[in-house]
Length: 129
Image 1 (spheres, helix red, strand yellow):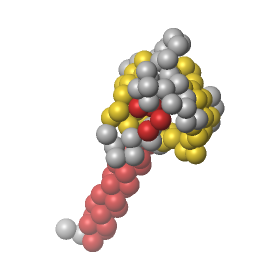
Image 2: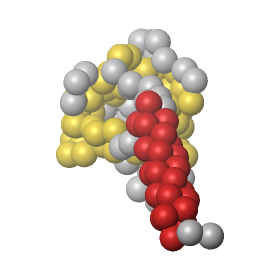
Image 3: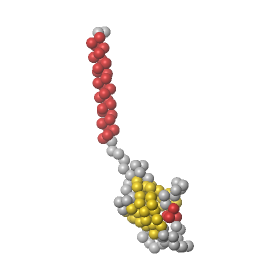
Image 4: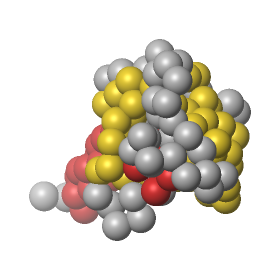
């Protein structure tokens, strides 16, 4: 085989590999990036003594049914919501389950906000309202 034929075959092989890589990178960049559902809105019950959270652009406000909660939140690429700098009143309300005061993170599954404590244990859910 002549040397020019070998060089031609090598150039064709390199060009084919480069083309395939370009095609694969183009496909990867065109693929839709899954987006996590936004928590913005009202979650929980509007009834007295019932827990709820209201999400705005970066803040949360709500109640565990007795105590008021406020703070901020961020959402990771995975969709997990992290609560930060949450402050709560500390009134004694023996008729209310105050689980929401332990919130640390949350995930959205359909129309439910699953709330977790700092140990990663699910402590309750709030329905999208």
